Amino acid sequence: MFLSTSSTDRCLRLWDIRTPRETVKEFPSASKEFPVGGFAVGCGGRFLARIEGPKINLVDLQSGKQLASYSTPAPAPRAIQFFPESLHLALVRPGKISLMDLQFAKAPAHQLPLKELDTPRFLRIDASSGRFFFVDGVSLCEASLVDSDV
Image (tube, rainbow, N blue to C red):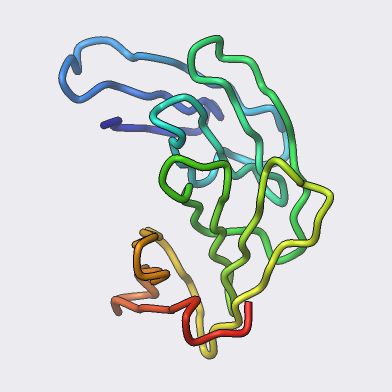
């Protein structure tokens, strides 16, 4: 489990909460225009996906090398989360959840529309039930793939 910070120096720092004295990794922003936004660690701690403005950057946590960069449509994602043990990402943005398969990044993302969604954050996924949980403002919200046509 990681603790993270991102500050005005545009650097994402990760700590292993079991040994919090030193950072595990530091990742400077690839963009001069956008600060590092949300991030997610996936595939058993192998990859880091992070939001930088309208892009999602995929980084190998062992080497620290950026593996890929994916453009996303506007508005920029507010929260991001890996599906357990896969290269599938869920991105939350005002009005929708987008589902991306990073192995086939050229394929269009599936869209799950969400009505009256304003400032979604803190996305969590229950892969066994196909449900998404997130905070919008001060409300806990839920969406489901089961009830959609995705």
